[in-house]
Image 1 (cartoon, helix red, strand yellow):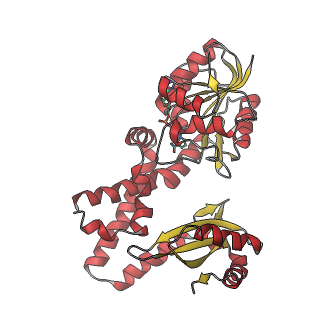
Image 2 (cartoon, helix red, strand yellow; image 1 turned 30 degrees about the vertical axis):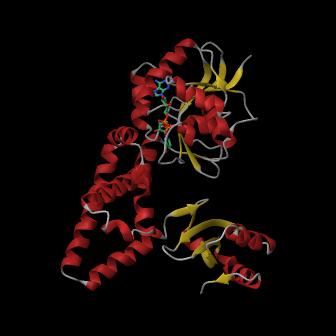
Image 3 (cartoon, protein in one colour; image 1 turned 120 degrees about the vertical axis):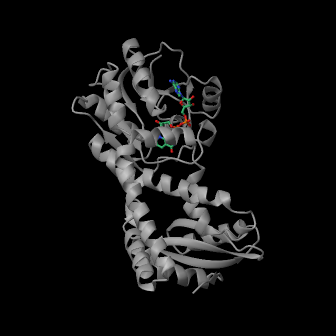
Length: 351
Ligand SMILES: NC(=O)c1ccc[n+]([C@@H]2O[C@H](COP(=O)([O-])OP(=O)(O)OC[C@H]3O[C@@H](n4cnc5c(N)ncnc54)[C@H](O)[C@@H]3O)[C@@H](O)[C@H]2O)c1
C-alpha cells in the first residue's frame, strides 16, 4: 500500500496536519519519541509508518535543527517523491539542508502562520491552519512538483498559501512573530519580582499581552537564535521606544505620552486580525449577561436568527460580580443591525 503523506515529527504541527487531512489523504506518521507517535495515532492523525513504505510527499514537522539530517536520510532511502518542512525560519534551514547534501529539487520550505503556546500531539487540532496564511518558500533550485505538493498540502489543511523568498519570509516573521515573543517574555519576566498581591488586579490587559510568554523555551531559543540577525535590530527599536516612554513618564510629559499612544493606535490599525483584514473592518457589540449557563449560546442563537454573521466572540468575566460581558465581533457594516437585533431579542446591549 502506498500512502499519500508521511509526517515526520508528530508534535503540535505534525499531528495537526494529520488531523486536518483525516479522510482526505492516507497519512503515515513517524517520531523519534514513541509516546508522541502513539498519541498522534490514537488521536486519528494517521497510522504508524513502517519505515519502508514509499509516499508521494514527506512533511518534516521537526525542530529546525533536525530538518537537514532527517531530510538527507529520507531522501537517500527514497522515502518520498517530494519533501517540505514547516520551520519558523527558512533561509538557515535551507542552507543547512544544502550543506548536509540534500537534493534541492524535491524540497520546498514552508511555514504555516499558525501555532499555539502549547506543544506536543495532545495540543493538536484539525482546525489549526484554517484561514491562516501558509508561506511557501521555494529555493532557486526547487522543482515545480515540490512546490505544487507543498501548495496542495497547505490548501488541503484549509490554509491560504503565500509564495515568497526565504529571506523575505525571515524578515517578515521577525516582525510579526519573533519580536512579539521577545516582548511578551520580557514583559512577563518583569512580573517575577512582584508579589502575588500586586498581581491580584491583573485583567485582560496583562493576560492578552503576556499570553505567548507561556511558549516552550527550547523551541524558541532555537528559532530566535536562527533568526537573531533580523530580530535584534527590531528589539533595539522597541527598547528605544520604551526608553523614550520611560523618560516621558518620569517628566510626566503628557504630550509625549499622547504621541506614543496615538502612534500605537495607528500601528495597531495596521495589524491584520482576520483573513488579512484589520481591526477597522470589525466592530464589537457588547452584551451584559448574568453569569448563568447558556447565556453565550443564547446570544449566538439570537445573532444567527437575525442573519448576523459573528466573526469572533470574547467573554469577559467581571471579578466578584454575578455578571459578565459577551463581546460579539461582527463586520463593521453590520454593527447597527447586530445591535438592533440583539436588543430586540431581549439582550442587554451595552452602549
Ligand atoms: N509551535 C508553533 O507554534 C509552530 C508554528 C509554526 C511552525 N512551527 C514549526 O513546526 C516544527 C515543529 O514544531 P512543533 O510545535 O510541532 O514542535 P513539538 O515539540 O510539538 O513537536 C516536535 C516533534 O518532533 C519530534 N522530533 C524531534 N526530532 C526528531 C527527529 N530527528 N526525528 C523524528 N521526530 C523528531 C519530537 O519528538 C516532537 O514530537 C518546528 O520546526 C517549528 O519551527 C511551530
